[in-house]
Length: 399
Image 1 (cartoon, rainbow, N blue to C red):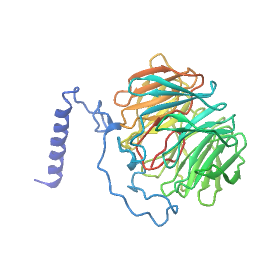
Image 2: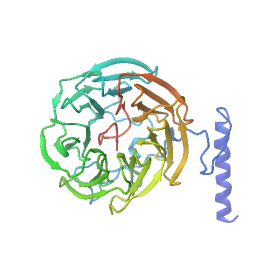
Image 3: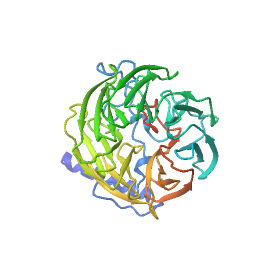
Image 4: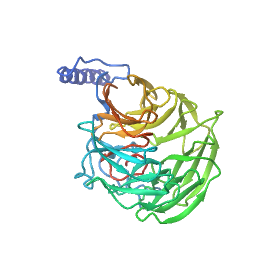
């Protein structure tokens, strides 16, 4: 038999076996992408590549990427670091108007604690070493540490205007997105002592993500509709551009698994800007839905969940197909904002920014599993612990 025919037969046999295995759960159907329509893609674990030596052009001190073709290779379902394996699974919700963090048990969907914190907490951010959760008290000018092992809050650390927080891939520095101050402030990742202040000319530095080699990161400026490119080692802005949309308001930033593109949600343009980070040229645009805001990658690196805050939906983007494939609608609407994916990849957790609630969504079906009332103005919630070797910040960008 011709090799092509043999391969075709093999694919058919494999697909048939998979279909038979799924019969006990539901009917086996396929979409045009070759994925089973009811398959929980986000909870499937591809073969784990072996760790590699660090690329010679990578940021010195950065842990070697597990797979150069997939920056999220360390984030497979339940592949927890030994550092976090004893931590209870929790969802931490910062309520910007209530000055509290609501703690939810994801197994029962019940609130188990409410932690008072500083004024206007915006995001709950896992530290680079995975040992601490930092609550960004923006107007309180402080970071409240939470021990994820005990769930107890520690003494706040004085940090001015901490709207958001990231960590350089080498683990040396925290990068504070000082939105009102118009600064990127590099601080010691452990003590939070200021190391270098980088003034920026854009307004509203907000979210970011790092290149595969860790050499640079892309930053969104929500109030001036701009993007920055920042050299990580030099701690210097090396590129700046205005987005081609009147009133653009860029939000969350995520790199593609292969590291070739950055996706930037824009809540006024209602979609994604797609940028070649290396070239930093004019980005393309993809419409997703009203108020596009948060971006979250599935545990198998196949898909990205896009929260459309202005219409109560979540769009699904397939990286391989390079297109949107589905849209999930929250029953009775809502305002899905920031969040994260459960450790097993089966549940997407999002805050309902303007509805004082949190949504738990099945990543297999898009069905709402729970809608939980919390404090006022829930924002950058963190699901913790999550798979990965270290954290780059925000509500959980792991490598």
